[in-house]
Length: 446
Ligand code: PMP
Image (cartoon, rainbow, N blue to C red):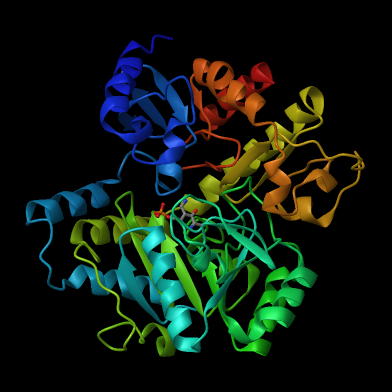
């Protein structure tokens, strides 16, 4: 494949943008990322005219793929043509809020913002205000956006900033614990419980491989929060309206969080975030309450139209059956290929998420079926090898993954997630033949 145009755009970008990109992961495919010209269904076409099956799908927002259904396209175009935004309220914000409140079990009221990061920042501020406490308990290997409270690693007794520029004073108010480890969460509550404002957790860890919760784990977190008077915040920026359909992951796992953060799909491909939850809590945001929260672009009419039309389309069509069916086919097909060609690696995922994790499960039994894998909807014979927490995935072979991404998959016309840790996303625009082509490419690559 010829990549001259991408290479030269990257050279220009390096002079004017840090690392040549506007978000870190985009530069992961070295020596240069491909620059996209346009999308087409489940595919993208790059600046050199090469076509790829695209499993990145905007890193999650594009549940329908790159083609907007007619109603969605019309809604976006007419909103943009009517003057894109006003700084005054519009009907479409109310309609979108009503849709989310109607479908997501725990959400009675919602505040729209402009990114997943902004949503988690505001949710932490809200939880701190409601409880009068300082600390936020997070999961090691989780991701909640580029914000000071959660760019923290280490453990509960020794939290450290994970980025330059985050003061230790922030890290001191964050309590990182391992995912899927109820005893660790309980111990952290025993030590810090009186000052824990909230537990902030992805229902499925989807930024460090894809790590499924073990049975009862979220129930444990729910009861610890109840016992200590802390709030349970589900970060559904990735899982929201993808895992568990219109009820989101909280519906699938039957958990009742106090607050939920959203992003990605609810904006239909435009910048968005939101904080939803019980009225008594969400109403503490200004101007109803005294927790300051505001944004020039919040509830942007073009975004609201795109998001609402996307969700309506999902409600009226077989979107979830289609994407979850293809997701399952990919996980099953990939499991067979891995069993033959790379038995040290594991296939993970759920619903329309899938991922091949380059980790070796030292000493894991090869032929035992464990409940964790079964819940991931695929017939793999190596469930004990499934990562149980994001940190298990950290030891993955990232160099080999880079070789899989670029020479092995990209050159066969398949785009999988840019690094070892991000998920792959199935869209409504994908077809059976995209799946077959992708499995063939994996077979060749592995
Ligand atoms: N929370 C989760 C679970 C995420 O996956 C992400 C981004 N992938 C964020 C928050 C941050 O969202 P954004 O990139 O829109 O700021």
